[in-house]
Amino acid sequence: MHYRPLRVPGAFEITPRQFGDPRGVFLEWFKAPAFEEAVGHPLDLQQANCSVSAAGVVRGVHFADVPPGQAKYVTCAKGAVLDVVVDVRVGSPTFGVWDSVLLDDVDRRAIYLGEGLGHAFMALEDASTVLYLCSTGYDPSRERGIDPLDPELGIEWPDTDRHGNPVAPLLSDKDAAAPSLAEAAAQGLLPAHDVVQEFVESLRR
Image (cartoon, rainbow, N blue to C red; front, top):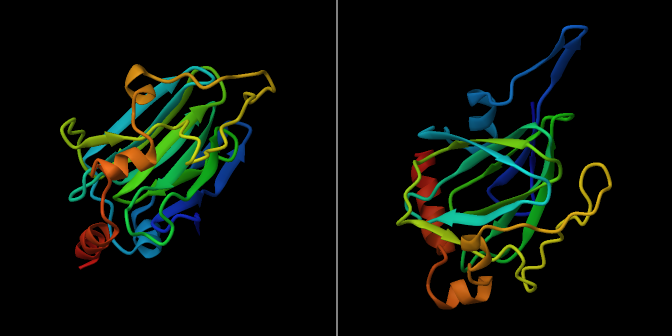
């Protein structure tokens, strides 16, 4: 299992070792000792989610108030998604920076996003199935969002699916109505970098 830091500090791409034979494939998609060595603290698993999306569906950009925030460890069990992490921490040296990882049922990678980071993905195949391990349970009063199509944020969403067919972003009404990054900052909706860092340090202690 290999951890690669992404351009957004606090986020990692995880590539598992796969063992295949005529019967199929086996892999470990999460392993606590490897996680703790790479991230510096355990993952306090409080909720596990599964979402199934048609090609072109975009979910996010979502994040939660810190503390406690909601860290996510995400993989794609079926199909393919472009998974995106966004630095929404006000005062961060990489504020507004995003990075992406292709999650699919071939390489079977995962992505980890620490507390205070924004998360989104676009499905690249019908019935793409995404699994999340979450550090806290869902709390609608603390859930926040940013417009994934915000031109200033500039996420480069694919215009074709996994098979080369044209796709256009399909958003929920809630995500479509979400503020831009600048609007969210002006409204005081974004986590502060120093508060997030202090909370993450408390997890390491």
